Amino acid sequence: MQMNPVIQEEISGCGIAACAALAGITYAQAKETANALGIYAEDTALWSDTEYVRKLLRALGITAAPTETPFDTWERLPDKALLAIKWRMEQGRPFWHWVVFVRSEREAVVLDSKKALKTNTRRDFGRIKPKWFIRVD
Image 1: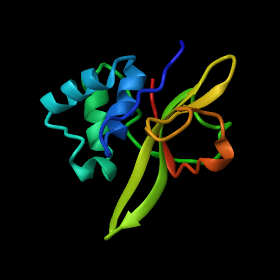
Image 2 (image 1 turned 90 degrees about the vertical axis):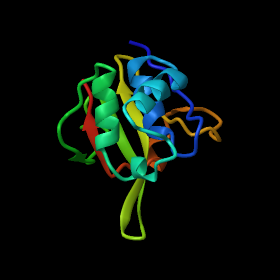
Image 3 (image 1 turned 135 degrees about the horizontal axis):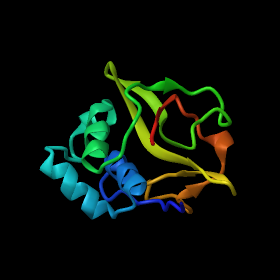
């Protein structure tokens, strides 16, 4: 199945955009579902808690692994995963950027929702430093 990147429309909308890409819907559709669940891109907790994206994935009918798995190698990743990249600590809280990893028969890519990128379908794995991932079915 061909998956397309979804561009985040708010500074902290990467989780919403990643869920939209996995569900094959627009950012606006995913945001509407998120808002109905009490999830808002303006909430900085979206950057440092996995429960928000898990709740949104469930609402979109997508099954995710119950735990985060430390990133080891690109080869060991499942065919579909949410990756936490740009992981850092700020004032004692972890923050990261959500991206989607997807592997097909033809290739593996990272769908990155960041607006400023020249291309949102990334193949520059050496530059992406995942901390951990959540397997998505």
